[in-house]
Amino acid sequence: MADQLSALDATFLELEQLDEGATMHIGGVMVFDPLPDGTAPTLEAVRTDIASRLTLLPRYSQRLSSQRTGGLAWPHWQPDPQFELHNHVHRAALAAPGGDAELCEWAADYFSHRLDRTRPLWEMVLVEGLQDGRWALATKTHHSLVDGVGSVDVVHLLLDAEAPVSCAGEQPSADASRSVLRRALVPRPLGAAADLARTGVRAASASVHAAMHPRETLERSRSLAELFVRDELIAAPRTSLNTPIGATRRYEIVRASLAEIKAIGRELGGSVNDVVLAACTTGLSRLLAARAEPAMPENLRAMVPMNVRSVSEQLALGNRVSSLFVELPVAELDSIARLHKIVERTTRLKTSGAALGADTMLDLAALAPPLLHALIARSLYATRLFNVTITNVPGPRTALYAFGAPLREVHPLVPLAAEHAVAIAIFSYDGLIVLGLNADCDSVPDLHVLADGVREGFAELRALVRA
Image 1 (cartoon, rainbow, N blue to C red):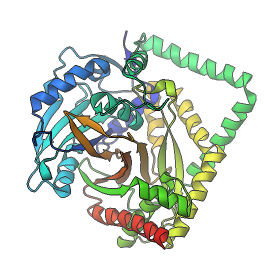
Image 2: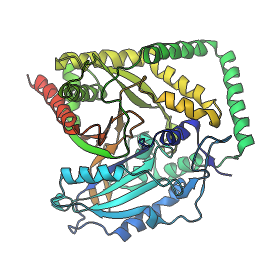
Image 3: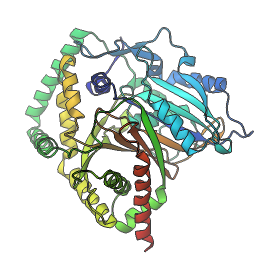
Image 4: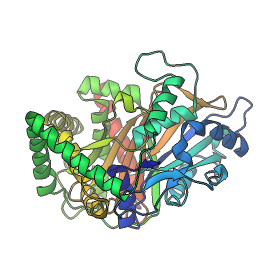
């Protein structure tokens, strides 16, 4: 009895196997104020605290049954008989003065190294030496273990709230969290025969469902057809952002006020996500212009992952995401026109069933046996489909604490697939938004141009609101 990877979970293992430059872990750097006594916690204190909470996360003491995919059955999670917490929780110290530059340089090196597949697929580092006595917890978790939204739920279990959230439906109680988590981690029987039988059951169930729900089947088929025409037959433009990459990374952060972004959306139109996409478009436009692209594209195509978890799946590990493919108007010079084009495009995609088409494509890919799935996995993340990943993960709205010290900000990470040199993760927490810019070291030595361009994009929109 054990817990088997889904086809989507296994995809992130396969992407690493297909390209040495791909690093399929997600993570972040959580920055805290000093403890009440002005110090940082000790490494032993952090290990003891994490150990006391891991009873709610048994997956974090499990390893893969097989280090590679591609056989007749998907790997599954099994208890690691050699699990030792000290192999997963470490300590590091920044060089002086411990500012953003030093922290980002350290994070770039930390995120450059793959996780050891012979052990449970996560790590945490206590980082000391930040300016003003601050300290950080840096985390790295393989994407096959959890997606971005699921990782936020895990953070809630590893940190403390100042007071329980009373709003119905926003955060479950501790007892409810444990109940949902246990249901999510109920083991299932495994084996090659069981996996092949399960694939057959999925196919048969899909056929029965299609016969009983012809209208839904027609809608999903139409959405899938539109997706292939728009995002496969009409390929994303070829740019200098889509080139073979290595495993070494660069990392930068950009901060923005959530209240200001909401004000921009109210005054100029658009959601928080639209405003952030507009600022990212400005940054990407500045980067391509600075590189003097031989043929400046009119649009870049961004893959924007969408959370499709139901309320009952809160705290469930594994991946529950689909995607929208959004055209970013990098050739548009006017900032308000740029925002309005993005609003129009995201609105059209949300109402056209594009997400349903992407979800259908994932469902169809899941029907393929493990032996053939790696070929499909590569096509799902090909440069024909998209140029850059931009993911927005809403974090906690209220402050969280560790050892009595408040968490001030979170610097997020989204991984790079093969031939995708730049990815942007957006994380909102307690009124602050931080964008984590992850890039290949060799092909993006000018990552600071992108960061400055994103800041410029926000500044232009704020100026329009003031005007």
